[in-house]
Amino acid sequence: MTTTEAPRTGSDSSAPRRRGFPDPYEIGSPEGAEGWRAMYPYYNQFLDARRAKDSQRTWFRNGMHFPEAMPPFDIVTSDSAFMSTGVMNTRVFALPPALGIDVRVLNGYVYMSANGVEDPEEIGRRAGEFAVRVGHYYQNWPTLYEAWERKIRAEIAKVGAIVIPEMGELEPVENVLAGRGVTTSNDLLVAYQALLASVDAAWNLHSEFLNMGYAAYLNFLMLCRSHFPEITDQSVAKMVSGVDVLLFRPDDELKKLAALAIELDLVTELTAGRPHEELRQDMSSSDAGARWWAAYDESADPWFHFSYGNGFYHHHRSWSDDPTFPLTMIGEYIGRLRNGEDLSRPVDAVAAERDAVTARYRGLIDDEADRQAFDEALGLSKVVFPYVENHNFFIEHWYMTTFWNKMRELGALFVRYGFFDQVDDLFFLRRAEIADALVDLQMAWCGGGEPLGPDFWPPVIAERRRVHAVLNRWAAPPALGPEPSGIVEPMTIMLWGITDEQVQKWLDAQDGGDGGRVLSGFAGSPGIAEGPARVVLSPSDLDELLEGEILVAPITSPSWTPVFARIKGAVSDIGGIMCHAAIVSREYGLPAVVGTGTGTTSIRTGQIVRVDGNTGTVTILSD
Image 1: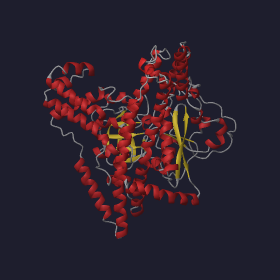
Image 2: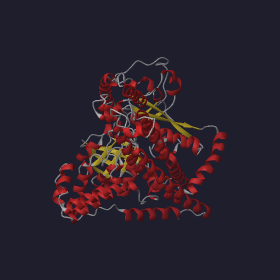
Image 3: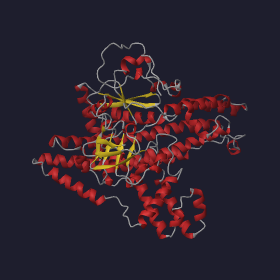
């Protein structure tokens, strides 16, 4: 339930309002969560003093990366991600028409608004810089990408090696005898600062190549549209499909382990659905079992550092933290292999269709220079495409799994000193508040006194947990503010699927549309499928997904890839032609409609729906 606060100072309820989304300054706090603003820094909020500016901008909810209300510390991922996107666009590559993205939090949900360049002279000046900088990356992409992978692997190792000091009764004697001088109290401060510096560095690396990958694909898309005005986005996407990416590797590892279980005659053990630790202990007593678990561990590092969510939230644990899902899927794959099923993705069929579509359109271009430009743009798109997906495994999954677990080591230290009741209480403090709590602990440890944190933080955290639960039940609108126009930022278009046309569809749905029976979105993967819907709001709901159902989710995580073998089609609230749901659906030959905005709130589990991946529509056929 949501209360409606009175319009804030400066509103004119009598003035006619043009078509648009809700004004962020006229949206009230959910009942019972009126104090939510204390959980977030001022720079993420809609400040009253900025109403004249911020209420005139369009703000899109980033439900792809932040589908849930943000816990206070977790906002560090939003800050780092948007800063890295912004600095690459604005300062590093000088993208001519687009700068970075401003961010606000409303009732715990992340909204974004792109900053653009409108002055033609400034666009021209930036275009000159852009050509030099991006040209260097495009011309040397394989070499630079190889160096990038070394850098991110080093950053993962570095954050994993950060030591959270034990802060025992005495300074370690070896430090004293070595005449070190600097104590573990300072080490604690350095460790926390190193964690923040590392996550910032990792997200800089995340965006180093990403926007340029989207820009290359967007350039190819626009070139195709200039030659073939009626070409569909799926036809363009097909021309760069069939490229192997790392995000399929974890699923391939599960299939390999299933095959090994059959070979070693371990079917009964691995299809019994027993808890991980109990299963490992019992199986390890036999040679076959020990061999299988050795293979499992080899696959797990790094491929099971795969978040159940998207890596942006501390509570989205990974397969390596909780092996329930991978073990369940291994059991399912064992059954399917024994039934004679082919578990491989239709790679050859996808590649054949890719080549046929490419040849068809290329053959329609008569001018040799135009054909060469087509070949070059397509070739570049194929070169950059693997990075667009591969970075996701390295950053959102492997790195963030390591980062969150290292933060938990810091939380365990606070639990030991009585600041918190449980390790994950740490994430209900803002980053600046953790710095304050560290000083409190330092002062008490150094002076032999008692920290104040145990008397201050427990009730604050309990209240924040309660408020956060209320915020998670709030239905956040897909956008805020006036109707936008001229969307040009590559990630906004290619990843989130936010285009001028898509905004019109959202507005139509907001105004009533087809009575809620027909949803419009982005045609992510071609084909038509009908079946019962299964609304999946969190990874914990995946176990309920049945064979032949239509998956309906806010977004899909790469770690959900194994369940695409069960479903007939996919629908998501957020996403564009290059989002994960669209890419995986194309590789599996499933229809998908992404970027519907309201799929999970308009469709109920059990309803029969038709997913038309050719037109980008989802029709609710019956209840």
